[in-house]
Every structure is written in C-alpha cells, then in structure tokens.
Amino acid sequence: MRISSAAAAWALAAPAMAAVPSSPNQHPIALQGSDDAPQRPTRVASSASPIETGVGHFSEWSRETKRQFLIDWQAGRSSEWIIVQGNEGGDLDSMTAALTWAYHLQHATQNSSEPLKAIALLQTPTDALDLRPENKVALDNSQMSSGHSDLLTIDELPEDPETLATHIKGIVIVDHPKPLRKWQAAPILSIFDHHKDSGAGPDAKPRIFETVASCTTIVARQMLDELEALPEEYHLPHELLELILGAIAIDSGGLADATDEDRKTAQRVLARSNWRKKDLDDQMEKLDDELSDAKKDLGNLMLRDLLRRDWKGDLVDTPSPRTPTVNLGFASIPYSLDYQITKTGYGELFDWFATQAAWTAQVGADISIVLNKYKIKTKEANGSKKKRKIREIVLVVRNDVRIDEHQADELFKVVKTAIENDKTLNVKPWHRANELGRWQMAWTHERSDAGRKVIRPIVEAAVESWD
Image (cartoon, rainbow, N blue to C red; front, side, top):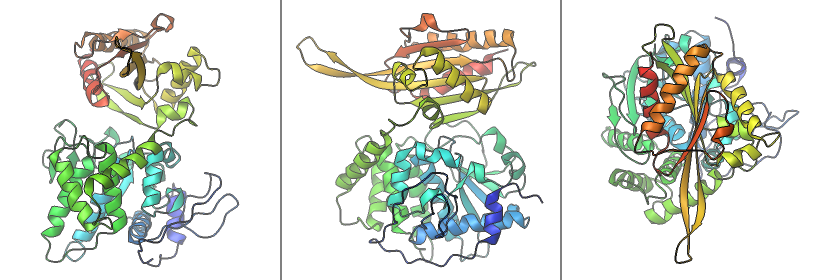
C-alpha cells in the first residue's frame, strides 16, 4: 500500500508517547513563530517553530489515537476504525462533538469483549483551523498541543475519503444531517444533529435529531447517560469537560438562548468538571464572553480566508440527465459586502468577484452562496439609536466545471427566482446590484434567523427541481 501522507510516515517512526499526568495547574507554553512549523507533536525544535506537546490525559489520548490510526492504516487495518466526523465548517460545536463521541466510544468499550477504535476527523484543512480563533482559544484552554498536532484533519488522511470510506468500519456524523458525498460508501453507524432530518442513515443507532442550541449538548448527554449505566465509569478528563462547556456556551449565548436540554446537560457536565463549585450561569457567561471575543477577532483576515473559514459544500442531485449533480457551496461571513470589498487587494467590486471565483474554482463549486450579516445603527423618532441586524445573500453561478453557458443561465434563474419568491425573506436588491455581472446577484434582507439553516434548503430545493 502506498504512503500518500507525511502523517503516516511520521506515525510509524514516532516512539510511543509517555503518559502525562493531568493537572489543573499545568498550562502549555505559548510559542511565537511561523505557522509553517511541522504539524507533529515533538519537543525537538525545527528551523521554523517547535511543537509544544499538550499536557493532560485528553491531549495524550488524542495524540496517541491519531498515531494508532495511522499505524493501522499502514498495516492494512483500516476496517477496525470508526471515524467520527462533523461538518466541513469546523466550528467549535462540530469539533467538540466529534472529539467527545470518539473519546466515549473508545473508553466505554475498552473493558468489553469488543473494544472499539474511534477517531475524530476534522473535515477542515490544518491551515484553516486558526481561521476560527475561538477554536484555538478553546483548544489552548484544554491544554492541547500547539499547531493542532493532536488532531486529525482532512488533509492528513493518508487516503482519499472515497477510497477510505470503503475500508473503515463506519462513520458517525455529528452536527450535520448526512455525510458528504465523498463518504457515502461508508456505513453510517450513528447520527447526532440539531438540524433538519434529511433521512440519511435510517438504521443508525443512536440516531438523534433534536432542536437544541448546540449539537454538543446531544452528544454529551448521550455520553453521560451511557457512562452512568456502565458497571464502572471511565475517566472523563477535565480538559474535555471544559471543552464541552465552551461549545455549549458559545452556541447558546452563555445559556441566554439555551433550551432546557442545553442547560440540564451543561449542569451535568459542570458537576464533573474542575468548575463544579462555580455557578453555572456565571461560568457559561464567562466562557461565552471569552470565546465570542475571540470569534470576532477576524480583522487580519483577507477575503479569501473569510470565504473559506466557514465554507460548507457538497454535491446536490438534479433531475437533469445532462448534469445529474452540481456542486453547491455556502460561505458565512460576519461582515457586509461593502466591508469585504475593502479586504481585497484592490479594494474594488471586481476584485471581490475575482477572489471569490478563484476560491470556488479551487473547490470546484458550480453554485456558491455567500451569507453575510452585520449590524447598523439607526436613529429612532425619539432621538435614541437602535441597532438593526442586516443580512445579505450573494449568489454566483459559474460555467467552467460541470455546466455550460446555457445551463448556467437556467440554473442561475431557478435559484434567483427561488430566493426572490420566498416571502419569509422579502429580499431587496443590494445597492450596487446594477453593477454585477452575468450569473451574479446580491440581496439584503432583515430576517434575523435566516442563516445557512434557512437559506440552504431553499437553494437545494431549487437545484433539485432544475431540469
């Protein structure tokens, strides 16, 4: 079998990692240096920047699990592994839910006659992980190794997903209703999600779709239920418990937007953590403040990074015999289109679309939707100022991947009409819409909850009806 990843070669050469005792007072050293440092857990300095190995049981487990997975792949034992994967946006909720369930599967079965091997896969490239600064803060707080070297990312897989999917025991999907098309050959063992049920994996167990603020709530609750039913509980490291609380906190606004299940689960997790003596609301608000502040720290990102930091895309089936599938992608950006234009090299409208075209060409998208949100201050009749939430939708269709010019015309019209005809959105043309080119359109609207969860079904339904 060929070795197509440096990760596999490193795994075979690396010595077994010694256990590092967990201590709430231990913290990894923050290192300054290039992000091009070798992404491997080692204390040996390189010409760029060394990796500082994380401390504590959780970092040790994650690092050793990654090592064993790569060793087993090299030895032809991929069939022994379950891959727990979130969505390709790689937000804190998706990452934490995947890590939590992989940890649970391994530890809940370790003393059984059929122990499971499970690893969390982040479907985000390594160099894109720091585009979400809140993830870096949460991982640092959980005493993980620098450079994300404890984590398995999509670009570290030693085999393409389409092939690997046919070899592994199966996949568990968290924070997403169905697997990406490249994983469709893998058996779906479980699904945990807080989105709309798409019907995937009807035989999966557990298979839970529930409206909660955070998918991590569902996963953590299931983990605790199963843990407490075991004859003897396994060890839950405080670093993992604190990561779970952070994911729930940022998704629920520090519990301000939490459901009863979010709150109950957070309380159960808190009771097992090093923060057990703290007030739940105070601690969750503190976590939300810290992570939300980090999440907003995007001022150094140029447009290409803003597009790819929260990109989710996949193939969508159509009834067209000419083009049975198209690649549809969504980006979510917390800035207005006008501001994003200033984050291009030339600071001009044409450069926004040139940068967007270069990114979508790289990922092979036929249709892309960019969802923007921002706030403006307006003056009320009584002289007071009020913040209004504004959202934008930018639609672009391209004709150089799977579709020709005529098909691009048709597809653009179908999707554009679907967006404009949705009465719940009540979109209005963007103020510079008359300057846009062929197969380009932008709108504004003020439906506050209309993020990807709302817009994606509208667009997918339009694509699926295109003939």
